[in-house]
Amino acid sequence: MRTVLASCWIFALALCLPHALSAPTEASSLAKFKVLVLAESGGHHVEFTKAAKPWLKKCGEENGFELDYFTNTTLVTESFLTNYQLVLQLDFVPYGWTPEAMAAFKTYIEKGHGGWVGLHHATLLGKFDGQPMWPWFSEFMGSIKFKNYIPKFSSGTVRVEDKTHPCMKEVPETFVISKEEWYTYDRSPRPNVHVLASVDESTYSDSSAVRMGDHPVIWTNERMAARNVYIFMGHGPWLFENGAFTTIFRNAILWAAEKQPVSKSK
Image 1 (cartoon, rainbow, N blue to C red):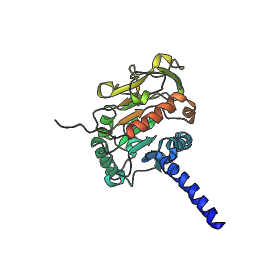
Image 2: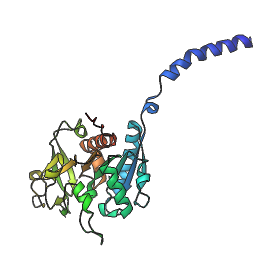
Image 3: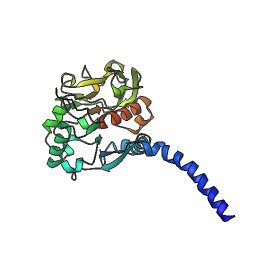
């Protein structure tokens, strides 16, 4: 009897095993990559970071990436960055990098060792907190310098300019951001970057809000080897209730993390 039962068990296992081996779960079949997240440890944007963490965790589980969070760049070196396919500057100021981290990140971007997505505070370019401006980062962002903002916030309509770009997949042609500071700069970055979307300043809910004219809010610097996307929006947690914003954010992460195809020499 035991011999018969054992034979049946082995036969059943043999039937199931090929299916188990040939049909991995969706989660296990996803290609994993790692994201280095730089987030501020205090200030006005902490609530945005708190809301971003569970959203990013879920996005990573669904799309096959993992995240490591840091609130400073003391560990960032060229060798350290080799562990990551993407740097996500989540409301982390450009003057918060150590000199060694600056040099390592510059190489990372210029050599295309990985991608970059920056939000909101990443263009707070100027002399703040007693720190000098990082000239290379200003050039990276389109040779701009922070000038002003809307401290009382304003809603505004964002208009997609490049509908064919992967970051704009499934994003409506226009969408409303209900509450933002809408940074202005000393000049438009447009001549030096590829603009993906801009805000229509005529739609501001605050008629007295400061304006800059041509006002890009999402762009990529195609002069760099690394895929990179800057998304101006990123002040408050309410953004994660906006489907257009979260779609752009997800698309940007996945696109920027993908290595640029290497051109073949003739």
